[in-house]
Amino acid sequence: MSNCAGRMQRSATITPPLDGWPLQGSSVRVFNFAPGPAALPLAVLEQARDELTDWHGSGTSVIEISHRSSAFKQVAAQAEADLRELLGIPSHYRVLFLQGGATGQFAAVPMNLASAGATVDYVNTGAWSKKALGEAKRYCQVNVAADAAASNYTTAPSQGEWRLTRGAAYVHYTPNETIGGVEFPFVPRVDVPLVADMSSTILSRPIEIERFGLIYAGAQKNIGPSGLVVVIVRDELLGRARPDTPPIWDYKSQAAEGSMLNTPPTFAWYIAGLVFKWLKQQGGLGVMAERNRAKAELLYRTIDESGLYRNPVDKSCRSWMNVPFLLADAKLEKPFLAEAEAVGLANLAGHRSVGGLRASIYNAMPIEGVRALTEFMREFARRHG
Image 1 (cartoon, rainbow, N blue to C red):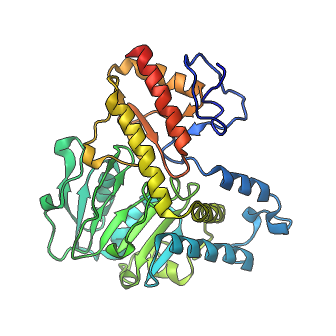
Image 2 (cartoon, helix red, strand yellow):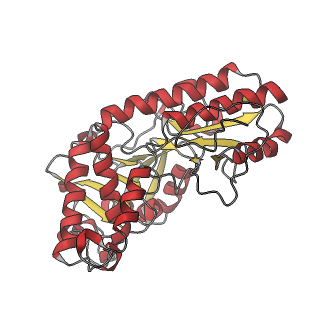
């Protein structure tokens, strides 16, 4: 094949038939559709590579310097400043760079925001919101204000369907379900602090921070490597942690120590800072929103126009970031994955809990990658449809 999708960083054109250009042992980078840990911008990886053994002429790696050194404190401060600029985070919000991933926050949120015996409201739209509310039940009374089970978690309940608790400590929802590919088309309006797990949507578009009391996001999708979670919390919500909350999970304690109550994940923090700079160089989140919308529209259009592929999610709630799809004949999944892998379209298998196929198209995925995928899909459908 004269021009193949394996040479992804140079060309996005696939010339059928897809008769093989195996990448085993190749140094050519593929288009990586992994849901997380996910692809990072190539420019960020190259800068980290170039600085790895001699960071800024120091003769050491950024991995090797103390988190309490003035050099790393500058890295941390710049990363926070850039994130604040990108998201427009007001001064009365704290930004924390913590460990434990989003899963750790499933426990930290109720420990910090709800006293023992308090009631909290959760909206269940799939796997991750279910895990979050399940963990919250260990610490307080959970009211499931809405549940998308009737749609098999292929839609987001309209707010008119929610049964909220008067005086709840907070309302929690998951704006985007990474596994199911369901995304809320609206930001809820509530009278108590709104808490959002934005792991797979943060930095993909502008958001109005002041609509939220607390946002948390695992890093391994649009921020950086795994091992880091970013928490953005309104000042007035600090100092509410129950007495038995370990200091490591206490937002006020962490804020007082600049997220360095203990040794933080310094390398992940440093990479996150490089990603924030890259996003600024791209033109900010307005530009990223336009790119992400275009990528998603192209992929969904390809699915909808095909007789072979199907996306199960209600069209009003389709995710920009995670696009699951099914084949008309499930027996074709293995050939699809094998052929895609052979031409440099990697990590397209669906989550192990649901099967099928899934393309995660976060910020680092260029439009050329989605074009290459859709061209492959059309050619595969021509041969197998």
